[in-house]
Length: 397
Image (cartoon, rainbow, N blue to C red; front, top):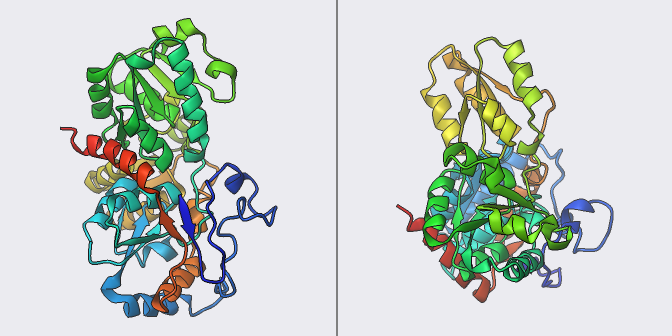
């Protein structure tokens, strides 16, 4: 991946690492603080003119810019999005706008990578803050996954394994998946992707979210928990024996979403006690016991559509990111739908929230002045194999 910053900043060829998330605010090394400082002119968050400045810069750019806003973004950013949606929908929306020279992705790093893979060479994908990463995506590095494949090869099962990688993964992991005959999935089509994979081989290596893999296999496809083993990249041989690898149908990577992983069975029991008649609706990135205790389970788009179709006066506890839950609660308040956050503890996606109004204003004003900032560009070989994996997903019936 090549990161293009401003004219004042030397171009850096760096790979995202966990340090980019773990050490934010502690070091001056750009490898651990990508995007923390915008050279010279990041507006103050207290500037009362930020909204007008963003609007003026966007109007000046006109059709040259297309702003994508992920559902988990804060309202101050979402108001400037031309389209909103989940990561894959937004990447496809960007590809459908070839006239837009700049794609400003208000999301996180892997999403911007996917947009670059799917858009034309003439389009430039920009991430307003390069430190907006994804803890889940960072839980599976290319080196770790290559080592895992060596473990599977030594165990004599690699030829039986088809990799399936969640959209919430780096371009490197998508490329590995494409190179080894696998496909990408979203939380909406994970079951179909797994069905396809088991038509190709006997086992699946599911990356990087263990919960989506486990929930899809057990809840949706009727496998047992014993059919699943957990590969821990921080342990020799993933912490698994050869026999466990040979017996398993689902080899789950030890990764998770830091937001959805917070919800617990106690959260479900507590909200049912507090709000009689409540419907519990959660994302499939939640733990298996949470999904098992919920009334409804589905992707971000599923959650939105379920609440749109819900009858007036119904009560809902939602297990997903707080920005979206709060926005939905406000949207449907007039219809007398009571919508609450599943957990008592407030939990935003911290990296998604790095995209704030000052960063967006800085980005739009820089582009309006002819300065390309924070470009996300995937190298040719990685793009080739990642796109192959994505195309396999798009070809799924």
